[in-house]
Length: 393
Image 1: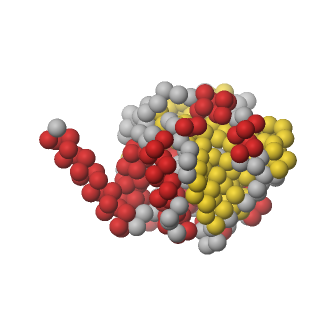
Image 2: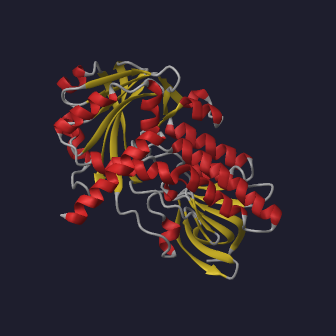
Image 3: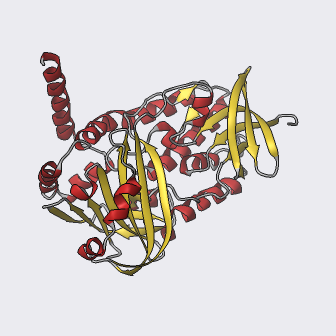
């Protein structure tokens, strides 16, 4: 290993949060992104659900998403159907989007290395020495003022320094992506109940005339693998029930996200968490790409402020902003997540019957984990009652 390479910011992870952060830095701070996969955006590890208005606000080109204006939710004996006129959903071309974000980072001056696996980091004075095994270069050492943990659920940087907590409860998902022969291309479907009693499933039309069918479960709430559920599920009867005729299977996407309460601590000196490393995936349905991009850009701007002010104080504002944004909402979202993980068929039927009565904005708020005060008060009361019952039993 040669002499350390000096850089202001080392970002571990080339997902949406890390790349969005990198695109904000050059001009004030030099930046290197190390990403362990051989290609940005491959393999795909997420179903890519999002919201049109957020993507527009983030400047994401329309070519990277399929617009969804209908949502269907099914249990064994109930069906909820909603037209989404003002809260349109989107399904993303993950590979295309991530590579676009990488191009923005490179255009701004960041160096993005693929096939580069982070090994460890140690503190040395005001800097960190990080070991990275890079394809074609062997072991490389970076000396940086800041290290950004954008590695996702593994939280590789924090784990290397024994900081924070390991994500013990995780959402594990798998989906199969097909060519569409016949299917509604503007309708997303969520299905629950006996076909996926230990989790939930989805059917998402995607860009390029593709369709994704997936299943997610929570570990360790269940020992089942999502593949154990999806393989016997995809019968001709199942596909016919949703009006689907599919062509060739194009690829298999699989991933893991944290499924636990929001942890408000994002900053450990000059080690900072962002994206799924900071648990931004919503506890309701696990979508969070829009939040990861926004959070990454916010962190990049704060780091630039640190350089201008010659102070790390702006990082406190980064932590406070996201605590205010997510802590309370995700507390109740996680409570709901834990509750529905124990649902049986009858519970799901009652729940979907209630969902059918929601307005468009109420449904969007529920899926986005942006709950109104009345709903949060109700959830808080339910939590309190549960604690009291346990105390007297």
